[in-house]
Structure formats: C-alpha cells, structure tokens
Image (tube, rainbow, N blue to C red):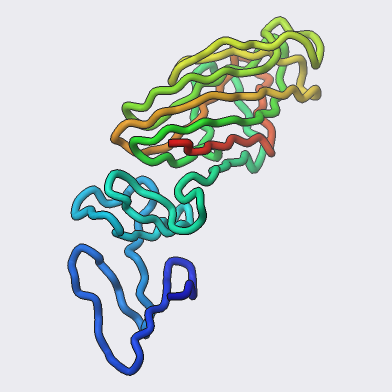
Length: 229
C-alpha cells in the first residue's frame, strides 16, 4: 500500500476488477485508487463507527483513523497529537468598540473528548486611553484555564509588570497599550478540555475603552494548540 496523492492510497488489484462494497467503509474506487470519504475536523461521522474506520479531513489535510473511542491521525508515533497553529495574516483594528469580536484567523479546530495545552503570541498597539481586551472561546461544553502575560493597563513603557491572573472561557482580560507606534507583546498560555462536541477554539478582541483611534492586533500574531490526551 503506498500513498499516491492527498487522501488516496493504492491497493494491488492486479488484473482483477473488484470493489470494496461494505457500506461502513464508504470507499470510492477510481482506476485502482481508493480514497477515504471526505469530512472536516468538525463534521466527522458519529454513526457507523468501528475501530479502523478511515476518513480524510479536508481542512487539516490528515488521514484519520477511528480507534474505538476517538480519532487519531494515521502515521507517526504521535498520531493525532500534532500541534495546530493559526496566524493573523494582516493587522486587525478594533475602533470605537468594547464588544468582543472573534478574530477568525486564530480559530483552531479541536476534536471532541480531548485535552489540549496551548500557547500564543499577540502583538498589539493602541492608545493608552483605549487598551486591549481579549477572551478565549471554545466548543460547546469545553472547559479551560488560561493566563495573559502582558502589560498592566497602567503601562507607560514597553516593559514592566505583567498580568498573571487565571481566566476561564468567555472571561475578558485587559492588557495595556502605550501608543499607536510602540508594539507590545502579549503571551498567552493555558489548557482546554473538550466535551463530546468538537469545534473551534477562538480568540475575541475589543478595546478596553471605546476610542476613535483603534487598538490593533498585529499581523504575525499566532496561537498553537497541542493535543496531549
């Protein structure tokens, strides 16, 4: 059996012409190539499951195998436990708002019934009168704790005291800005435990106080989730 293309692998059929017809496998044959049925990480099948069932995830580009209780990535000693990283491609500005809004570029799809640890780096600028607020979101039923390591809201320099409080899902943390040209760094660390529902882990941002001069989450900001159980 050899991998010949994304989501496909070759079986030695010889001169015979035959198909796998078992309905649970959902194989599709095309010129001796058989590909696992396509799903995304959030639309994996929940019925007709059995150990060894294979699917191809079109959003993560992974071949996944059902192990009897959950999905593992096929191949490698750490199957199913590779880090997933999301980046902010362009500056994102929040102006005249204290209402948290999801920055979708930072969404990371998580599987059900799994434990993750995560870390990230957010660069940001803004007026000291506005600051920046953020919150962590997750799939339905998930639990999490995290901390933002960033400047206090009374910051007047680009280094100094940091915030080390522990927050849950949907709880807003506030970090300080200085001006529109001095980029500060915010480091986030924490863990998340998903329930029986898969979905995205995400980040929401807004200003601490509404201001006509926007608070900016800078391009290149990133977050990484690693499944550990």
